[in-house]
Length: 123
Image 1 (tube, rainbow, N blue to C red):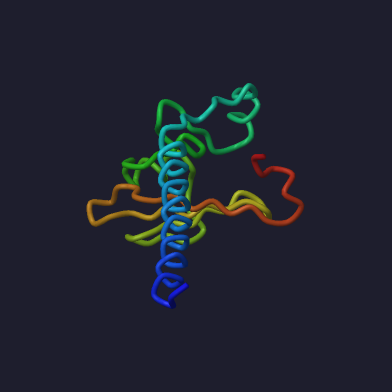
Image 2 (image 1 turned 30 degrees about the vertical axis):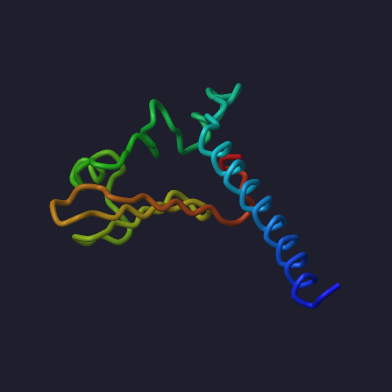
Protein backbone atom coordinates (compact mmCIF):
# COMPACT_ATOMS: atom_id res chain seq x y z
CA UNK A 1 0.00 0.00 0.00
CA UNK A 2 1.40 3.39 -0.94
CA UNK A 3 2.03 5.99 1.78
CA UNK A 4 -0.42 8.38 0.11
CA UNK A 5 -3.21 5.77 0.19
CA UNK A 6 -2.47 4.91 3.84
CA UNK A 7 -2.59 8.61 4.75
CA UNK A 8 -5.83 9.01 2.82
CA UNK A 9 -7.47 6.11 4.73
CA UNK A 10 -6.26 7.50 8.08
CA UNK A 11 -7.48 10.97 7.19
CA UNK A 12 -10.86 9.60 6.10
CA UNK A 13 -11.22 7.66 9.38
CA UNK A 14 -10.35 10.70 11.44
CA UNK A 15 -12.72 12.86 9.38
CA UNK A 16 -15.60 10.40 9.85
CA UNK A 17 -14.92 10.15 13.59
CA UNK A 18 -14.85 13.95 13.99
CA UNK A 19 -18.00 14.31 11.90
CA UNK A 20 -19.82 11.82 14.13
CA UNK A 21 -18.71 13.63 17.29
CA UNK A 22 -19.78 16.98 15.80
CA UNK A 23 -23.18 15.57 14.87
CA UNK A 24 -23.66 14.19 18.39
CA UNK A 25 -22.75 17.54 19.93
CA UNK A 26 -25.18 19.39 17.68
CA UNK A 27 -28.00 16.95 18.43
CA UNK A 28 -27.38 17.10 22.18
CA UNK A 29 -27.32 20.91 22.08
CA UNK A 30 -30.62 20.96 20.20
CA UNK A 31 -32.14 18.51 22.70
CA UNK A 32 -31.01 20.64 25.66
CA UNK A 33 -32.45 23.80 24.18
CA UNK A 34 -35.76 22.05 23.41
CA UNK A 35 -36.21 20.75 26.96
CA UNK A 36 -38.67 22.59 29.16
CA UNK A 37 -38.16 22.87 32.91
CA UNK A 38 -40.27 20.50 34.96
CA UNK A 39 -42.21 22.33 37.66
CA UNK A 40 -41.40 21.32 41.21
CA UNK A 41 -44.00 19.23 43.00
CA UNK A 42 -43.07 21.06 46.19
CA UNK A 43 -43.60 24.57 44.81
CA UNK A 44 -45.36 25.78 47.96
CA UNK A 45 -42.54 24.53 50.19
CA UNK A 46 -39.91 26.12 47.93
CA UNK A 47 -41.80 29.43 47.85
CA UNK A 48 -41.83 29.51 51.64
CA UNK A 49 -38.08 28.91 51.82
CA UNK A 50 -36.68 31.77 49.76
CA UNK A 51 -36.19 32.83 46.13
CA UNK A 52 -39.04 31.92 43.86
CA UNK A 53 -39.73 31.86 40.15
CA UNK A 54 -43.30 32.49 39.09
CA UNK A 55 -44.46 33.07 35.55
CA UNK A 56 -40.88 33.59 34.41
CA UNK A 57 -40.12 36.36 36.92
CA UNK A 58 -37.67 35.84 39.76
CA UNK A 59 -38.71 37.24 43.12
CA UNK A 60 -36.71 37.41 46.32
CA UNK A 61 -38.68 38.47 49.38
CA UNK A 62 -41.14 40.09 46.97
CA UNK A 63 -38.45 42.06 45.14
CA UNK A 64 -37.91 41.55 41.41
CA UNK A 65 -35.81 42.88 38.57
CA UNK A 66 -37.07 46.28 37.44
CA UNK A 67 -38.33 47.47 40.84
CA UNK A 68 -37.26 50.90 42.03
CA UNK A 69 -34.61 51.24 44.76
CA UNK A 70 -37.03 53.22 46.96
CA UNK A 71 -39.57 50.38 46.75
CA UNK A 72 -36.89 47.84 47.72
CA UNK A 73 -35.94 49.93 50.75
CA UNK A 74 -39.60 50.42 51.74
CA UNK A 75 -40.24 46.68 51.55
CA UNK A 76 -37.03 45.45 53.24
CA UNK A 77 -36.18 48.34 55.56
CA UNK A 78 -32.90 50.18 55.90
CA UNK A 79 -29.96 48.42 54.18
CA UNK A 80 -26.73 47.71 56.04
CA UNK A 81 -24.81 49.41 53.22
CA UNK A 82 -26.62 51.90 50.97
CA UNK A 83 -25.43 53.63 47.80
CA UNK A 84 -26.76 54.71 44.41
CA UNK A 85 -25.45 51.68 42.49
CA UNK A 86 -26.23 49.01 45.14
CA UNK A 87 -27.69 48.12 48.53
CA UNK A 88 -26.64 45.35 50.90
CA UNK A 89 -29.24 43.84 53.24
CA UNK A 90 -28.37 41.44 56.06
CA UNK A 91 -31.06 39.01 57.22
CA UNK A 92 -29.31 37.42 60.18
CA UNK A 93 -25.84 35.93 60.33
CA UNK A 94 -26.32 33.47 57.48
CA UNK A 95 -28.34 35.28 54.80
CA UNK A 96 -27.66 38.49 52.90
CA UNK A 97 -28.81 40.03 49.63
CA UNK A 98 -27.23 42.62 47.40
CA UNK A 99 -29.38 44.60 44.97
CA UNK A 100 -27.67 46.31 42.01
CA UNK A 101 -29.30 49.35 40.39
CA UNK A 102 -28.92 51.04 37.02
CA UNK A 103 -28.72 54.81 36.49
CA UNK A 104 -32.51 55.13 36.74
CA UNK A 105 -32.34 53.35 40.15
CA UNK A 106 -34.10 50.19 38.98
CA UNK A 107 -33.00 46.74 40.17
CA UNK A 108 -30.86 45.07 37.49
CA UNK A 109 -29.45 42.17 39.52
CA UNK A 110 -30.00 40.40 42.82
CA UNK A 111 -27.22 38.47 44.54
CA UNK A 112 -28.23 36.27 47.48
CA UNK A 113 -25.65 34.75 49.80
CA UNK A 114 -26.26 31.97 52.32
CA UNK A 115 -23.51 30.91 54.72
CA UNK A 116 -23.07 28.92 57.89
CA UNK A 117 -25.25 25.86 58.51
CA UNK A 118 -27.36 26.52 55.39
CA UNK A 119 -30.60 25.65 57.24
CA UNK A 120 -32.42 28.58 55.67
CA UNK A 121 -30.98 28.14 52.17
CA UNK A 122 -33.38 26.82 49.52
CA UNK A 123 -32.69 23.31 48.31
